[in-house]
Length: 121
Image (cartoon, rainbow, N blue to C red; front, side, top):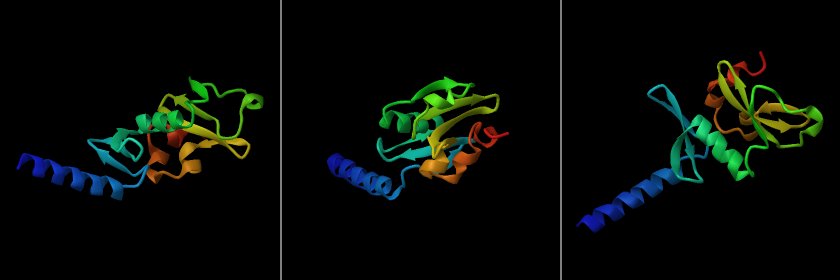
């Protein structure tokens, strides 16, 4: 009986997790949780960013309050900018730094997550 229940749970979880979209977001206890389809788990927003960066070979530039030298940056480079309000994953796309969410289009909630809404102030 336990084996049948475990199998049913696995099938239900599998069906539920396949219905979720990569980058789908929700707030739980005032914390942004993001579905990572690669790991099939909910992660914090920053953990999701770092997982994305890792899947692309890792952050191209170290987490910092200072942007990398423009002449050294290449298309699709990633950078976690530190602001007093929080952090935000940036991606170099079409000759300028953009919010990674503007390039990847995960979920609009990322635009207000952590320091992202303050990046261009």
